[in-house]
Image (cartoon, rainbow, N blue to C red):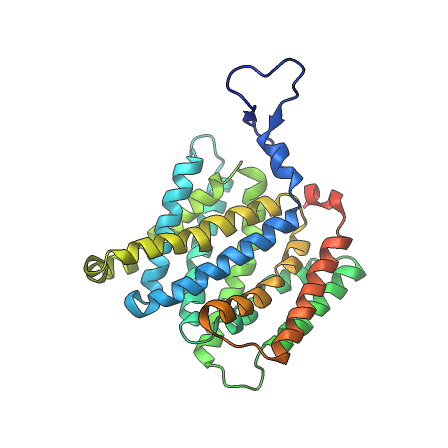
Length: 310
């Protein structure tokens, strides 16, 4: 786990009161269970995806990705102000690779989201992190939670149904990018302090997707309110979840993180129900029970000492 000089927070400005023990920001962060970061990040990302779907009619998926990524990069750069000096070539290449991965993940997922429902898209895309969980598992219990998650995905997936083939293929492609994101962000989270690595990667993704945003310039000029909505999507879909996930990956193993992310299809289905009117049936409810069981099991049986070794 990376060590950095931490700011110290006191109740009042100036020197600390006599006998008062300093409370560091890192100490406060460590008090929150890493699983909580993952769950809150999932909810934020899915709400952002649901809001983004309303932008597709006006901007299209690619332009929505461009604006979302640009706003997210701007916020992260202002907050973290990463420095390029002193960084090794390996660190910078990792940030570049993560930026390419973020761009591919967002473009493929939003293109899939235009063609298939949110819950279905997330279910298919989850093949990526699920693969990380199964390949990296070393204990029988880890394999059990992975099997339960697979069962939930299979139940939630409309196998044999009428799913748009291109939408399904794009969602699976997003799953491959998602797996790469988990591995790359775990490395960056250990070597670049705070969200500096994420800020650099998001800037790279913003540059890659910039042409799509420029192409939508006339539509944005006709209705500037779209920019405000895109800003909200950027915060919900990128800044909040990616920052929380990076913090979580500093403290739990990559394979446990992958199983915890099994909540994603279930929460996506619930968000789709509430915000997009996608009704859930008994099949979907059964899937939610399976993936929640897998996630809770992974959290309860994880070795706390593994987080630093991951």
